[in-house]
Amino acid sequence: MMKKTVKLTFVTIILTLLLTVCMSAPAWATAGPYQAHAAAYFAGLGWTDYAADGAALYAPGTYPVSFRFGLNGQPEGTTGTIQYQVKPFGQGWGGICENGQPAIAPENAASMEAVRIFFNGTLGDYFDIYYSVRVGGQWCEWVKNGEIAGAPDTSTYIEGIKISILLKGEVPPATSVIGGGIDPNRPMIALTFDDGPNGSNTPRILNRLEQVGGRATFFVLGNLVPGREYLLQRMVADGCEIGAHTWNHETLTKLTPDGVASTLNRTCDTIQGACGVRPVSMRPPGGGYNASVLSTVGSLGLSAYYWSIDTRDWEHKNAAKTIDHVLSNVRDGDIVLMHDIWTPTADACDVLIPELANRGYQLVTVSELAAYRAGGAVPGQIYYKFR
Ligand code: ZN
Image (cartoon, rainbow, N blue to C red; front, side):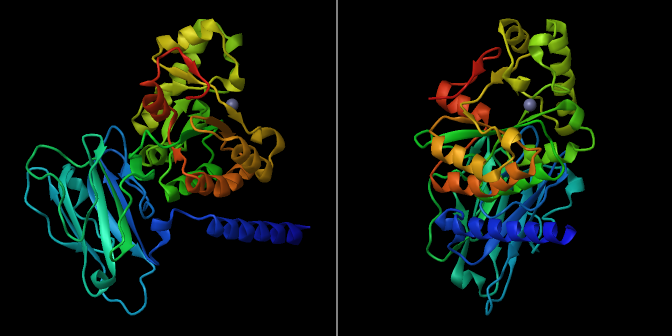
């Protein structure tokens, strides 16, 4: 019995991998045999994991004080590695570092004005290293091969970074879902995950989002946050949004206004304590709300989000059904309801997230969707979709 389960799990993993490879990332991301990745040390958060080639690395409410860059799968016959240097705020350029070394000791805790990244050896004969920094809430144009990213001596500082290796002569897309550069003229949807965080399935979904430069919204339960603060910190670093789902999945229509305020405030306080960012969005458990609930929600500065696509993943726990339901119904402006506590949902996301990106959907947060499609969400309002 045990053996059979292990075998079946193995087969599932192989099938998932095959599916993922077939329905893979945008062409430019896989055009090179070779990928770069970046990690940042954010003030107050510490080092992030390495983010995938092309994925944005930024954390609302804080800023990076050091970077590390590395490479995956260096082609045979090439020599050299990735090198880089940064200019800390108000100081001169730091020394040249390479291949995973911290660009500067993070204990300096200074923001950074500029960064340069380049190859040495023969790598530069075959590949370009592109990078873009986020300054003043905007992603700057890509620069490459040792050009300066950022604006030294202008009192601005770097808020985030993304890097990507391309074959010599290839050009990164001018507009891309990668890294917050949202194009309002292209379709966008908000994937939302309720009832987490979950130590095993939430990181799988975050990994998959990271691979396509996508983001999602996680409506978390406050009581599950203690011990999983690192997951909320990663969500923030990945550009995802964290909303409140209540402390322990209370049905809000059965609570007094004080009870509604209490469970939401306790949840928001805990989220803010864990990752430094206070939620601006919430989702009522079971979708249960009325005018009184929304009035209290509004008084707390929160906007409420229902959904336009209900996968019912919690009920059937069947990855294929979740995939099919989303792909056969999805339209521009949709809000998709899923639950990141179930393994079949994480299995479904392994296929869904790259396929939605392949179909041209920008995967954005609910607040981003509201901002780009409705000029922003209003506290106390509930939104089902944006189109
Ligand atoms: Zn729920």
